[in-house]
Amino acid sequence: MTTLDKNISAIEVSDATVRYKAAAVLQGLSLRVRRGEIYALLGGNGAGKSTTINALLGFVPLEAGRVRVCGIDVAADPLAARAALAYVPENVALYEHLTALENLAYFLRLADGTFDPARDGDRIEMALTTVGLAPDAWRRRLGGYSKGMRQKVAIALALARAVPVLLLDEPTTGLDPQATSEFNAMLQALRAQHVTILMVTHDLLGAAEVADRIGFLDGGRIVQELEAARASDGAARFDVQALFDRYAGARRAA
Ligand SMILES: Nc1ncnc2c1ncn2[C@@H]1O[C@H](COP(=O)(O)OP(=O)(O)OP(=O)(O)O)[C@@H](O)[C@H]1O
Image (cartoon, rainbow, N blue to C red; front, side, top):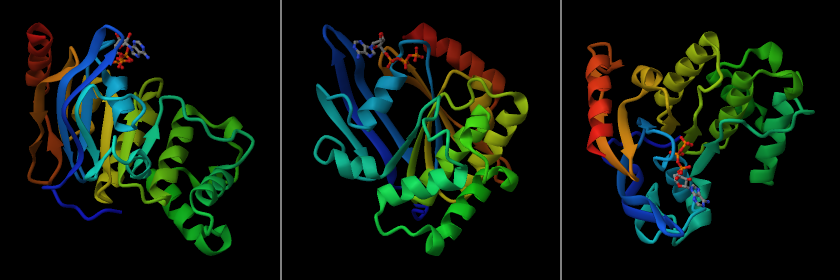
């Protein structure tokens, strides 16, 4: 994984404008996520959250501005930028008829032809352990997995590939409280490995539990940004009432 350097931006969006036909969806969006940081991007329907992810992945052209991932300009070198990213959609697409171990081995070999599960299997096991997938599930087909378990496999794949930046789209939607709490624990484990995470969500309270910073997107730009206070044990804490007030303020300001 990458070295933790809080001064280097893993994600840097500067004055980005994206237009679909007549409508400007991102309107001068600026956003920085530091290495090893968990950033939650909140916003109402149509605020431009998915468009922000698509801009990071180089799937939508910018009318103005710039997007960089680990210092790589997405427009100039989309393949190199994409190699630094793992995108985990709300509904993960992996092979249902393969086990977790087989899925990881297959996709790792696809990403790197020299990958050999017999020699490099430790990488897979470490990744599955970090995301907290119970070992008794490793040899079961994904067809019988819950949504939370599939998500763990997708994130384990990113970890095994040593991808420095994760983009998570609505990761806790449809997870039950147990799976949500496991997801939160997994994010802490990823943070310990200095993975940078941009998480798009509608869940303000969930974001307050795991994020280092929360940004509110409205009208295609960040209208409020809040940083968690650090407790003496190092844990990030938000004042939840202040968050709600700021969110309401953000929506009025937009
Ligand atoms: N390919 C497209 N062509 C035209 N308009 C689009 C396209 N994709 C998104 N839009 C519009 O851009 C706006 C922002 O969409 P986006 O999907 O980025 O919002 P969002 O914040 O992710 O919303 P949600 O929470 O509903 O997923 C919306 O008004 C949407 O209808």
